[in-house]
Length: 386
Image (cartoon, rainbow, N blue to C red; front, side, top):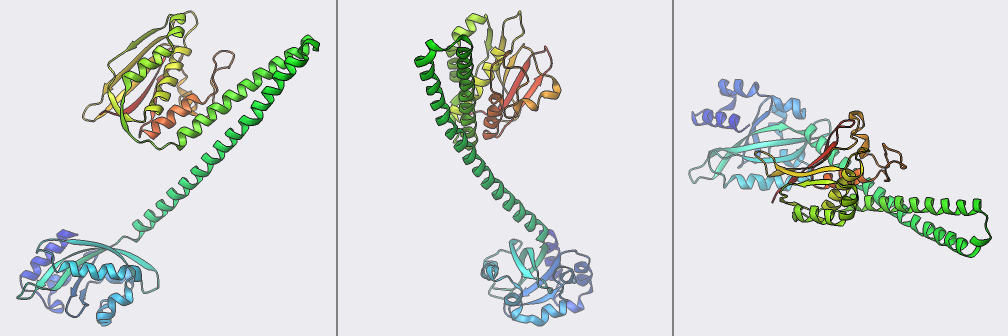
């Protein structure tokens, strides 16, 4: 639009000011799909409008000119009128060649509101340099503004629903802890007080009940952890990934020794993120790498961080040489409570990777998977390097 304004300014500088008697200007403006107008600051009225105003607002050029100084009060949305006149005032301090933009609403002849984006420039000054007229090109952006408003509404709606779901999930999982703990205490008391008088079958039932309650408690704990991660707002801080990785490996030292696992760790950078969440993510991915190894072999795990070209991001990858994952199952593994293996084969509740993917999203990333049956698995997340 500024190019159109500059072209019309050049026409004006050539001395064409009588709009009806300027066939060149008329032909130029009539082929433009946008509204072209000249506003007189002394009479506070439009002196000229091209025919596109009819398509946008339903008024003829003659009807607009006949409104005179009442045009803006009549057509402009009440909430925008003050900004429009302030915009006109700002034009007085505009240098020649500069363009000033404004979004505002005007009333269509049929009563609806139309959003316009105006690009305005000084068209004529008096001998003292005061602006007499400005020229403008206005574009109908109603569809764009409607889409923006719809997107804002849907975003706010999604935020509200997510908050309600998080609150519901947290409340449900938290409230389930109390009866679970109570039942566990009752079973323990029953075992202690009546165990000697119970037969072998009854004791086996009690044992199975204890195991089931333990599984339920683990599930509730995992669900609580997930809802807390979903609800957390990340406040980025420098996080040394090397410290986290070595802390996790130290914690799992006995397990690593017992399985004769081989762990290779490259230099780890410092990234921006949430320390606790990144610890949870790495702990889960390293745990998976140590867990899902092939029978008859030892876990073989590599942890690397590779800078990405022309960015400040690094690709953090945890790779194993374990059982692998079928390609058509790569999306499923991030689904809450989704397990690809029997619990008797590999422990877990099916929430670990869902939590990891949520943590990745909290860090403006996602987890990429590369895997195949008996080919091992690599999980990669991209993080911002300090």
